[in-house]
Length: 302
Image 1 (cartoon, rainbow, N blue to C red):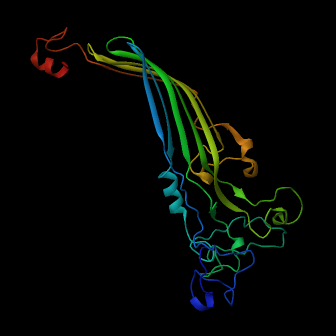
Image 2 (image 1 turned 90 degrees about the vertical axis):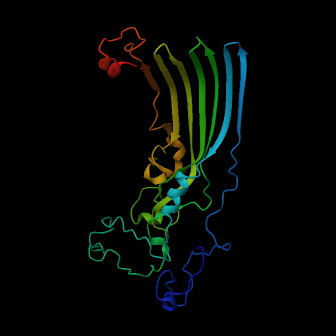
Image 3 (image 1 turned 30 degrees about the vertical axis):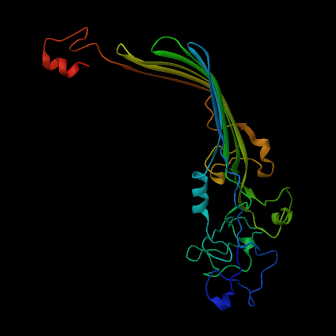
């Protein structure tokens, strides 16, 4: 807990401690610093670039930079923050049909899905919500390239580049504290923390890599024609985090051994060919074909 609120008898509303004397349930502690999440103070983003002329028409270029995710993940995390126990801002009831015996009936109804009411449950460890590692850090990406560019003509160049990136501290979600081995009886007895219900948990332990060979022919506009032809041969690899933000896109078969799910990313596109061009029709005043009809020349020309 970040701070210690008064008892529910004293305060009369959440957040409050549901015990009569305001004492904390077993396994519940108060963070002595008054804040649960830790700051990230290493978000340095160095950049370096190099350009060198190998000859009259050839240049070599290289660069490296680090980029932190200071917006997308942060805003998603911020909007996900909500008061869990001893508050009641978010309540989730799941696995209602997973009963241990046929004589046990679900204790939830559509008209009263949360019988606990406006006060927190006696213990926080039976709730299901999305938790996050207090030591989570901002994801970052190391990006680099090395390439050669050669001038073919006065208006066209050929470029060949190796482009790579390594992303670290990506969010990996999962459904944790489940039974690690099969067996009879209550599965919570075989969970790492039997007193805690299975729930969602996000950690910044993911990583990914990208490597590509990129070729580009670039012709600037001259004699009525400009075009670009680019080809990319690449490979993207990550750890079950191809989707968006932890739980929403996590597809690890075993969150306790997520390194086993290191494979080709869901967004991997090994071959990409892109061709674009602009062509000015040779029609109009001063062009090869100049219609005698001035109106037609103005409509079609240039």
